[in-house]
Length: 148
Image (cartoon, rainbow, N blue to C red; front, side):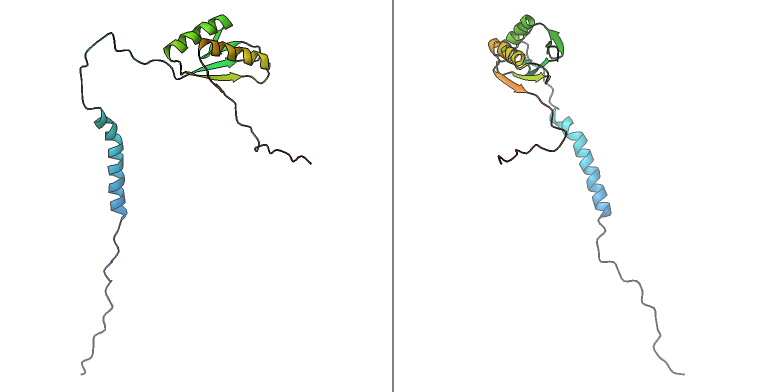
């Protein structure tokens, strides 16, 4: 009888890589918890502020929307107004906040003179910041043709 080496099948090698999947799961749960609790932590101090007539809330709008439709009818913040009423409302808005921007939306069929008239009413009221609202073109940007 000879004694020889016993052949064994090699056992599984230990895994040397770190499994990061559980770590990622825990980190995502923590991020969700922080997202939910962060707004709550910002307003935890409860105060009973004193009352006074001198403290005035700033309710003045930052912008007003002025629309002129095809027929020439003017709308201020989606309410139809005549030119006299429009002038009064814009003057009142300018008194509250002279930096209020007028966002002017005019139909392309409205004559240029009517748009200038509306701009004049806004400027007379004391609102000089006027922005024109337009929609983007549906096709590609128009290129300037060469002069040849």
